[in-house]
Image (cartoon, rainbow, N blue to C red; front, side, top):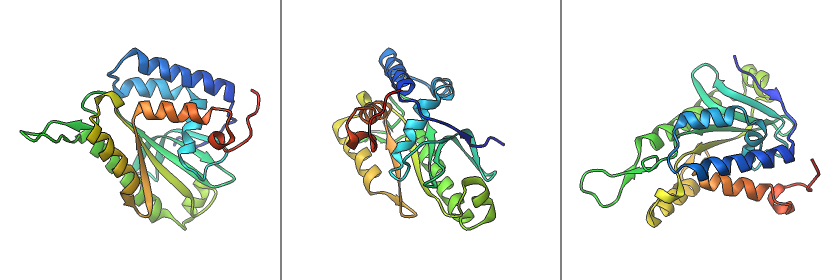
Length: 214
């Protein structure tokens, strides 16, 4: 079974890998899920920084790839902070014109795509399983504590394919739909890039910690 491995975030390598994400997005407006599989798998420092979508996660010092959640479900990758017992579980989907919204019949308002709903539902299943396993020895063996602070992150779509009203719908769903007292963070790859660049800025407000060399 894939397990968490210790990791030390190198901010200089992370900057390089974030620029590689920018180049990937700049190079094509339509990217399949397999592209992101190959991209994320080898970029450990980029994945570590993505873990900061969990505000309780201070030091991303644990990484796992294709991580199974107690045999029933699997996330694409996970990031952990062993000291804080905080974890981010990530599902990535494709980035194309129909990733988030699709035309449905004669309706002017586009519907949420099946790709989005499938990814969103997977995260709900993760939350279900993590809740069921809370306060069990298996939970403590995996995560170092029987009750952890966790966030589910869905990466999907491109900003350029969203209409103004669809941006508002995505933002509203991200901010107001609560699952077991938790938000599911849904961001486009363009928003991901913007957030990562902000977190790498020298501002303490962006990093949550003093800027260090290396």
